Amino acid sequence: MRISMVSEHASPLAALGGVDAGGQNVHVAELSLALARRGHEVTVYTRRDDPALPDRVRTDPRLEVVHITAGPVRSVPKDMLLPYMGELAAGIVEDWGTEPPDIVHGHFWMSGLAALDAAGQSRAAGRPVQVIQTFHALGTVKRRHQGGEDTSPSERLMLETMVGRSADRIVATCSDEVFELKAMGVPGSRVSIAPCGVDLELFTPRGPVEERGRAHRIVTVGRLVPRKGMDLAIRALRELADRGCDDVELVIVGGAGNSTGLEDDPEAQRLRALAVDLGVGDRVILRGQVSRAEMPAVLRSADAVVCAPWYEPFGIVPLEAMACGVPVIAAAVGGLVDTVVDGKTGLHVPPQDPAAIAAAIADIVADPEWGRELGDNGYRRVKARYSWSRIAADTEKAYQTALGAVAPAQPATARRSAARRLESTGGRAL
Ligand code: UDP
Image (cartoon, rainbow, N blue to C red; front, top):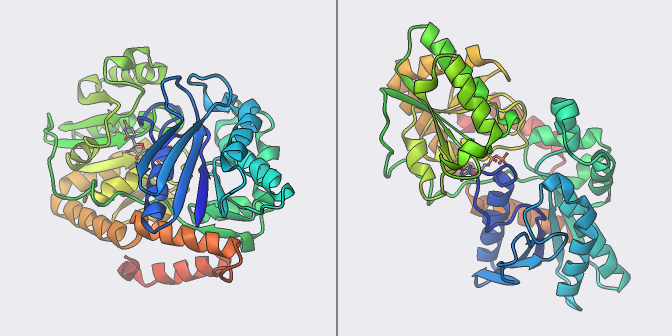
């Protein structure tokens, strides 16, 4: 197949950890590469945010990244990009010329608008293109959790619903998202599930391990935005100290630059001040951005990785931790409910509950053998289910269904009951 990916703000070539660069960048990069390796011709369209970027970058014999000028040629927060989606669509249509792809796959709601617009223009010219959409995050969920703090454009909910109802097929990343899509009026019969994956060559249980300063270490990784719940991990450290467990350090990874660059980052400053206020400032290390190459060694150095978001559309970090054989303490929200198996590959805790995070950390550091068992199970789980080649094969099925080449996969409800049956078999679901 010839496949166009549209990822307006999240370039597969960007450095990760900044406010707008995280899981979606990884997803688009890895899925595109895995599809290219399955023999498809893949082009990723993303917005040009730097004048130095070349028009086209070939990263694999069958994979090319194309920078389209749409709006100012500089970094612009993603919540201000909506006015430029028409320009992005025009650039895509121009690049397609008389040979549009079989599939255009929008990532995030705004790319969905550009994908629908480009496909509409192509259809009008008698050249049909099937539109696939992956939302990565839903405005309804964001609004529910962030309320007045949500900086998304006011039209987001209406336009997102339109994208959901108009795309030929939706690829959701977790079962929780399927419920949300149904509530938006997207029929379950048009939804496939293909989760995110993890690079199993980079993230491995064995390899270099970063040195740590104390007997135990907890690591948390993500874009430094409040909803990632880094503050909850700091509060958990205080709770642990109150229980007499103070030989634990917390490494917080993420931010736009290295640790000196964090001086200008308001969320980093808030976290640092909180740690000092709570009397754990000497045990909280704000690492700033960590490169892909360094990340496995940082994850391996942890007794457990804490992922405590308020909500999480998918969450690739838990997969990366599991791939490194490290247990995950995860808030039981969104994709983390699918990926982390409570008591098998880590522990689920209620959202926004530092005392529960502290109790989970205490249990794991008190029994290193059990921690290793959870880590080993996690590794087996990601190896069996979350390789990018497997995710690409699942995504390819969704494309084929949209093209009418194969019958739709089981409806989402049937998949959920199958999943429940698997869970009820206990550890065999691993
Ligand atoms: N990440 C990174 N360096 C950093 C911070 C994050 O490479 O300094 C990566 C992290 O390893 C993961 C991604 O960014 O691959 C974050 O994805 P996730 O799905 O967990 O969160 P999102 O950013 O999508 O909310």
